Length: 160
Image (cartoon, rainbow, N blue to C red; front, side, top):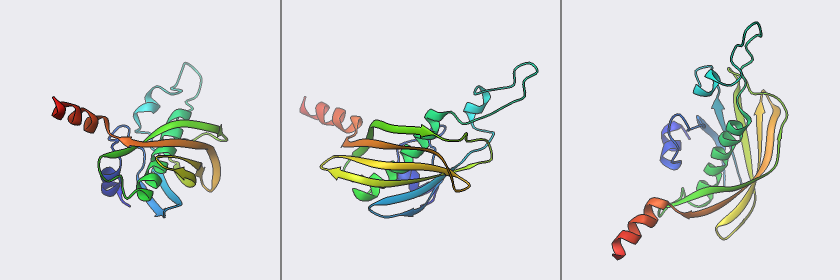
């Protein structure tokens, strides 16, 4: 899945679209990546140079989780037929999140998300992020599939 297909599936856009390509997917797992570059806007303020200290740019942990969550959203989309009918997956929880190593400019953050369970419109996925085949972050994400807010507002306006 290239960036054009990803943008048709996810509602995120720059600067918050954090998946560059999906390289493998099925109904039970997906593998995708984010190329991390020094041009990312968050590097301007996350551990910038201070006085005599050398620069140490690292990707913020919350954005690592966001990137991993967006790859997991592709898994949900594939499972539900690319979110037909105005439905979207919302992250409802992150459990067992661990950061093992920093993600730096020049790294390729590869995420593998595996579906643990789906029951109706809720589910869980195990997600691991890798750089050079070494785990840098992992966790379990829970999600809920629901109508988009825009769809809900349109339906309310139609009743009036």
